[in-house]
Length: 148
Image (cartoon, rainbow, N blue to C red):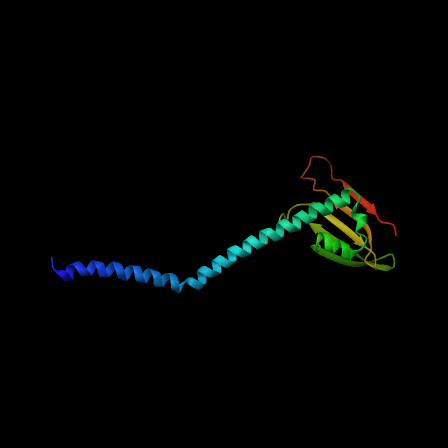
């Protein structure tokens, strides 16, 4: 065998190794984007867990009638986070707000917590709507009226 025939397979193997490395470098930005999306997915899951943990605490506070400890909107925001929806509407000659809290991931659940505030953003009522699918008992509501 001549020396030229022996070198050719070696050169081909080295060339393939180098070119495959170039392919990885050429797509490095795409690989880094995928890695970042993975990290964002972890952050999203952590955010959803935190929101749902706060929802469980809010449900317990409404069901145990301890929600009255948080008499205004600012205290509720600090303790339980932002609601998923806020609706402002006139009622009885003044504007009121209704805040809705629900599971951050399970969009088909019927379980919700409603918090009602007067025009000064003091909590006046809370309501826990239980998911009828979660238990075999008929749907129950827990109400609380906070006196000023």
